Amino acid sequence: MQDEAAFYSPLQYQPQWLWLGLVLVLIIGAWYAWIFRPARKMVAHHEDPARQVTVVPDLETLRAACLAAINATASDADAGRLPERDAHQRLSFLVREFAGAATSLPVTSMTLEDLHRHDLKELAAVVAGIYPNEFAPLPVHTVRQSAETARQVVLAWN
Image 1: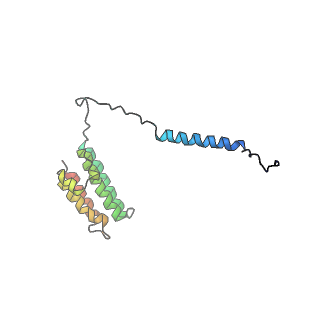
Image 2: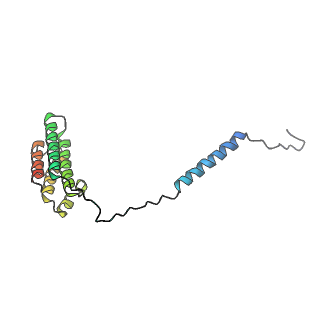
Image 3: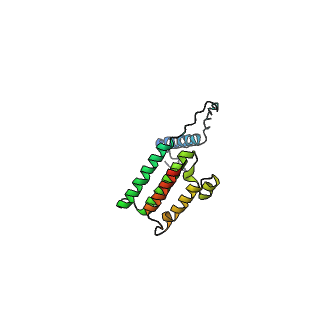
């Protein structure tokens, strides 16, 4: 209402705006509390090295499983269910996975140089032979030839 001095009284805000503002402040505060919360301290369990049990994989079981997977990959490629490039990639992975399980090394993520450094020269030669088939526009070798090479390395592994 206007008085004689042309003074307007202040307008009152609706009460829901006050509550909405408080809720937003609480949400932002909770978010900052969540972001800056102290991390839980992880308790490391140190066991006696003499009590640790090392699981040695059964080489014959690994070999049989890898050979079966190699044969399945070659069969899938021959039947047309698997593209040649994918078949070569799978063969490379299978041989690396077998070597990794047999040696307890992270062979699947090693480069050729790493394989040579760990004295896995036969494996490095097979992987180097499969590489062009994985990445070339046209494979240099057939899947059958790469599968046979992979089989020979798995069978010769000590």
